[in-house]
Image (tube, rainbow, N blue to C red; front, side):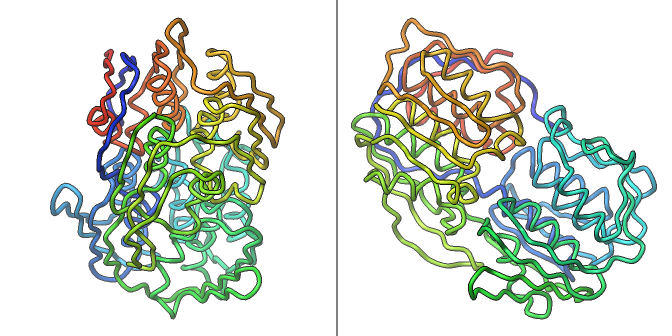
Length: 448
């Protein structure tokens, strides 16, 4: 069930701080762990799973499809996998993905090649507005059907393929579409071949990597992924690290807040996820990665951040796949830095939880920041740190957790009177966000 609705009001400008924190566990890996554990053999163990609304939606969906999931403690689970092709549901069972595009795309990938699936698929108000055309086209290649025809938004009826056969796919910026093809290929006849045109996040491959009978990755030139269909998956044993996307918001807050220091412990630092940090390091931002180690084919470590003066931000289109979730907080940083910042290759932001660049432009306009937005580029004319004492920001219900989090930071740094409606959407990805902000000294009021 989604969290109860509430609005949030920022009450003060944040003071300097010196803290150590742990951010919420990685959402992408948490969702993938439950899905892959469900179609693996025997019992999988997941430690430090995220307790967000999106992950709860994942667990509910897996249980509806006949999988036993036992909660050992607050963040530890046992998943009693049934193997490939084993998920089942009565005809017209409703699967609700909530706010999670990741869950929607990945589970549809699994179900498209699972025998005898005929279900209704839907999401919340925000997810139901997002186009699933690319996903539907891909799963149709495997033989799945979606009704009504030529409708590309939820709710939809999905009927799985009777004779799934592996496909060839050239993947682009979307790791979710790439993962959907990988997962559909696992239970297809023959092999599925993916040629990665753009390097995107690779958590699905990393979880599967120990199954040499299932996946082969060729890293020469552009990455090629080969999936061998109809092979059994070994159980998963994974301990999930902190989410680098959640950490980015606290990193931004520290960099922009004078005389502040933050150590964020045990964060996932997968090279496909750290575009945000690479961009800022090029600007000489005071960010360091410490205590790096590799576990479960993922790199993790601590992030050390100190406040510093920043330069305008310039990003090229090739950085988009490694920075997808962090562009909005970069927009906020650009607004509060003197000079013109330019963000290229951002057209895909239009098909997120909201039309993100468009909505951020409206929010920044409320505090007098000029933005120029084209389909694939955003220019922000930054003014440096703003005194927002006599300014107001109101964010309507967009169902977009990233916009809510960004606006929170914007209000806390500038002392702008800020009201964010339906702030509970943040709990889809970061249930500890407000608790951490409170420890850093931000005062806020919850309005129910």
